Structure formats: structure tokens, C-alpha cells
Length: 123
Image 1 (cartoon, rainbow, N blue to C red):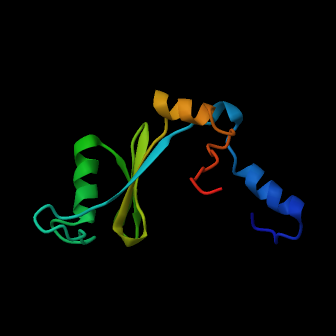
Image 2 (cartoon, rainbow, N blue to C red):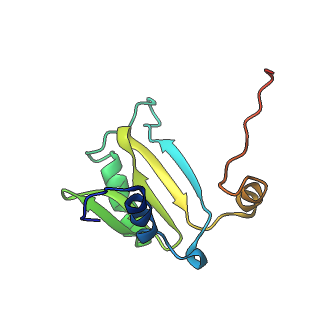
């Protein structure tokens, strides 16, 4: 959207233009992991022979993922049914585009937005 946002309708239109048709909607799962070195438990660096960047390159080469680059460095991999992205702080995010049966069942029991009320022991 290149025009200025001047009204609520402009905001709604912006999101509608970026939306997928309902027939293409999918429910997926997302897992976030902090990459650490097995010998010492330290967070992996991004660069270097044992870093996250090298891991992304190897996964891309081995499995044929399409890599997404920023300033010449891989920050994401896209497969046919999933993606792997690097979040701030080196967090690795893996997302499946199609939900497993347990994920689908949990969604179906929710309020339709994937949310369920949180209950505590406090009243």
C-alpha cells in the first residue's frame, strides 16, 4: 500500500489485499528452538563453520530448500510443506504448513482463532 493510511477502511483494505482466499487457508504448527553447542551448551554463533548460517546452507544443499537471503546471508529456508527462519537472538523457527491431526483437533476445539481461555487455580 503506497497511499497514506487515512481511515479505518484504509487499514482494513491493506489487510484484505494481503489475505489469501479462504480455499488456501491452512493451519500449521510452529516450533521455536534455541540452537546450542552440544559440548558446552552455548548458543551457536550465526557465522562460522559451526554456526547457524552454515547449518542453513547445509540443509539447503541436502534437502533442496529454497533459501531466503538478506545482505548475502541466508535467513530462511522454504520447503514444499514447511519453512525454517531465524528469529532475533538466533532463535530457529520451524513451521509446518499443514497441521497434524492433534493440532487440527486442538484448533477445532478452540474459539476459531486458535485461542482457548487460560484457566488458573486462582479465582
